[in-house]
Image (tube, rainbow, N blue to C red):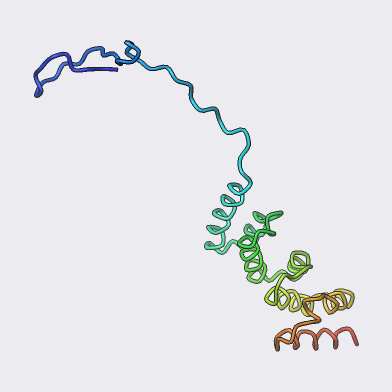
Length: 152
């Protein structure tokens, strides 16, 4: 610690000072040790931050690669589905959305199967619970087109 050793406020002179509690010019203390384990929520936040930047730059494949294994998180899933839709790679879409969670994902998957899927992919899609119970017009159209594809 340093303290002013003269009384001239406009031209101070500094010298060694002492803390009253210890009568020393320094205080000893332990630094906080580094964190041993990071919180998993911090990892997903950092990933989402990076993915958001990549999504803004329209780097769709990099978004999908960055979210590998993290697509179960709701916000990550939105980025993942959006990147798949923008990328337009039907094979990657069929792998990534093999189990659609909502109507939007089902429509994207169905469209990919129409474009480049096999009859077995179409049958499996038509047997999905989310597809069977839906009355949405876009999904109905996809179902009709897939049934025609199977019939061929």
